[in-house]
Length: 318
Image 1 (tube, one colour):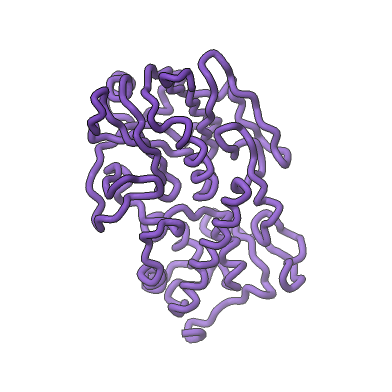
Image 2: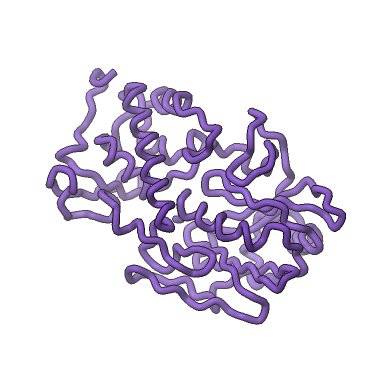
């Protein structure tokens, strides 16, 4: 699943090529991609046609465009997008079809011809394609509401308004408004495994399996350590490690294992070459030389080094 760095790469690609443009048409090829849209395609088409995209915003793994009417007044709605497991937002031109990207490693490609589900046509001839092989992603409109803390709603936002459907999503680690000590205390207040807590989008958003494993490796903490066993110092170390690894991933376009995870031009990111834990089962730990293991924990794969990520006693490091 695309995580925060991969979604931010997409947001940055969309921003200069869609903001300020007006939607002239909506092409729906598979109605399943708008299953979250109240009122279906007619409501979506009415909300979008003639609307101008004024900003593209991200919070965690969620993206949304702010919408204005023909007179430039905000409509009070946002066009929300989520990439799900295999979604892509690709930029093309009317009459052209995107070609499949070259991936850094073999894997299931998302065929732009077969898996294009929806297209937005813009007034300059740009076409924004939503391509999704597994159909867990989607686009839909959501009413804007005031955020509870009065600060900018997310990266790229002009104000504190955010879609109601994203109001439950916590701030992410690249958000300047995030309060790390408060998030650390939230981790420590629960007995669930720390990796489970990092994946909880209502505690901190944007972290998925890849970056959780990498952050815990960097912080020398096992995936199954109870949150209640963490000291405030260790919890902050884990969060800062997650932020640092995602910042490094963002610099190289995110993590791409196959052609599913690409930017708006179909190009892959290369952070997979810098991973220390995720996807390295059976390989030596780059820190201590131990062998990276993969275990199933709560229906997810977790990669860790048994030698330098040891169980943490509840009474230790408090």
